[in-house]
Image 1 (tube, rainbow, N blue to C red):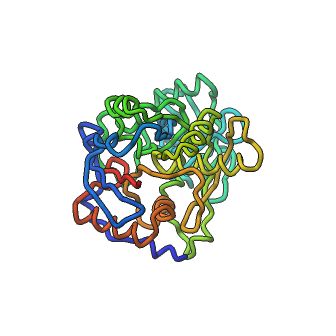
Image 2: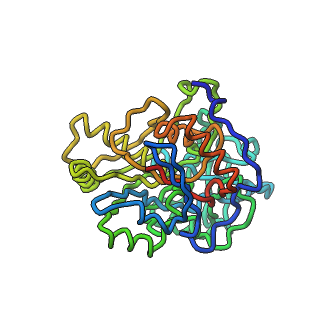
Image 3: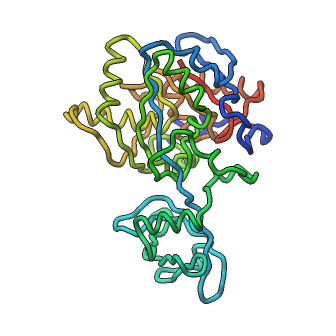
Length: 346
């Protein structure tokens, strides 16, 4: 399969720069998998499309303030540091540095008045670095909150006035460096309406890495090396899925990160881990031809051209159907990407 087959033309003005005032007022493009039907709604209409006994699974990972600006102690040059994920030992992280050439291995970066420092320890494949911080654990978390900024994607140019708008309302487990954006549309009211209707809401955790949003840079999809992300699926989520399936109800995943966590865990579960929580690192790459075991329905935002997220969605509804749907979204001026509108696939 060719990566270029997942390209499309998107006018810049459709890239959402700011979140909607009301989260659930985002538009919702509803796609029926068994017909050519498309309909237009708003996210607050979501409960209308679900029935009692359906299961909604969402990612409760919380975005950390992963963007830091420090300085070289000898020259005062400003260095930008973006945390990607914890590395092998406490206090070490895999990071992106800008400009990386100015901070070779062994050099230090100072933050604030010296309350926190980072030492470059190694260079990894792909140009990332390993840095060791002078603090770890609770102390590091406190300093990160003090010096860190929300790591908004590069296509968002506007200043985010309220950092909580890049968090879901149910964000709990710290660890993501990008938001699971399909969940940004939920409000307390929508959650309550789902529960009142008898829809069961459950949470998994997958800490989102920046690799999720990077375009595929090889010609053949099959040659793409997928990044790893840490996830956890608890036993009660498995039980809820089984109960829904047995009763003929649907399992709706909120976002591609939830899909990756659930399908990864289910594959391990089929290997004999039925009676326990499953956690670890997943590099699952879902593209057309993938056999879904959990997902019946999906809420997802509108994604970057040639991205793995676009390929995952096409595995559910087909490439031609997906691109035709995106063309409708462009014509109808839906908002794209992190702060954009959503699509509901049933």
